Image (cartoon, rainbow, N blue to C red; front, side):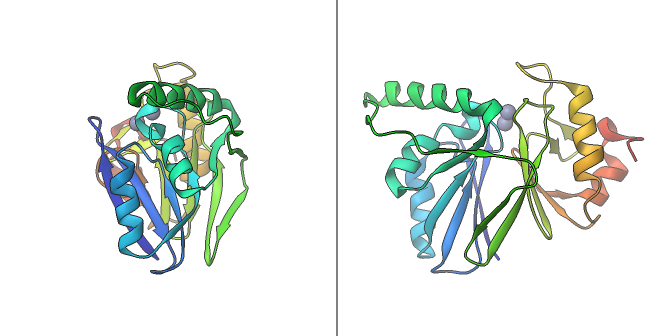
Length: 210
Ligand SMILES: [Zn+2]
Ligand SMILES: [Zn+2]
């Protein structure tokens, strides 16, 4: 699997580009902005973006979703509980650059728990993992969990923002993340990658969840 990490914006949001091999179709997870960088990264490996996936609707993760969708003509996927945030982030970004909404219908698709997103030889399983927001999801493919702001190395996502719930977050981790193989690499929304095994052992916020 081809996996690129671009760290974007003031909050250091991780945008991930996944493909089975150079020249194939790709998935972009959390296009946080700087879409020129994302597009050059796609072009470097001759990738065509087939879908844009959002782990949740916070603008530091989705600010580039609308513009990237327009530029590469790919649909944006997000859980419906977080879709309103995506629309307002898009409006804000368009306002900043002085553009106008294009008039054509937004290509926004709903992500549903246990759904498979398949592109070429690549397949990701959608896991609804609420807690940081109501519509937070994680994407799993054997070996990797792209979890947005659910788990960070040694920490967890904030639960004091709109729609946040610590109880829901802990349940998501216990029921969804912890049931994956221990050697699964956690690819978080911010900061370095880690593994399920390491976080089970060392993450002070998740101690005793097993
Ligand atoms: Zn967030
Ligand atoms: Zn974030």
